[in-house]
Length: 237
Image (cartoon, rainbow, N blue to C red; front, side, top):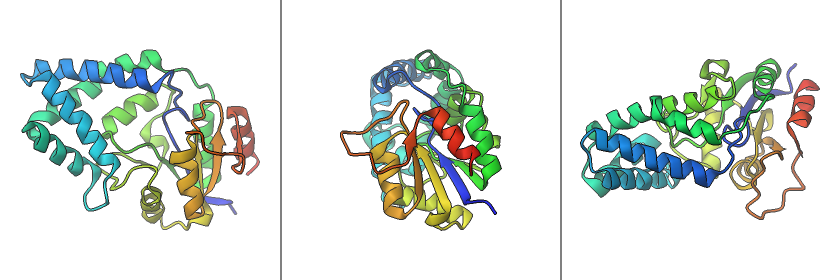
């Protein structure tokens, strides 16, 4: 009998190491602005509205899916409708978004971790911050040799109604598979966004320390280690 029915893993700085999150945002804002200009939109106005739309998703109360909150906020701020913003945004994530690859780092353990997740649990999920569509998530996964079809579920803006660190974000994933918190494991690098909400729910955790983000919070209480330790832990399940 498998110990866990569901194993979840974060993406950014867990499966996919990123050199610096600030640089990620800088490149994203620069390149998506250029894409809006190509489509005849005011680049500063559109990109700024998109940035605020992302922020609005972070505080979604669950009344709507994140993607709906995003486009509502964008239109409120800029006047641009979903029909105007979506095409250049999708174009960006399937083309120019590749520039972000330059600030990512290799992870030779990513595929093995994904394989072990599949082997050791009934269900697997990529529990990444759900502020992107699947195109952007799939692109990032590909940089470390992963594909969405290697997992049962990948959280995205259209599928989620909350964001980390709201425990209800993880609750939605548990509910999707009919899994109790005690039968789930979350792998992540962020104490505030991954460890704390899962602990509150009663989900077991593994803190990946290679690219750990603590937010100056204590973390000694969590099961933890580097990528090699995580692989050994999963192999022993």
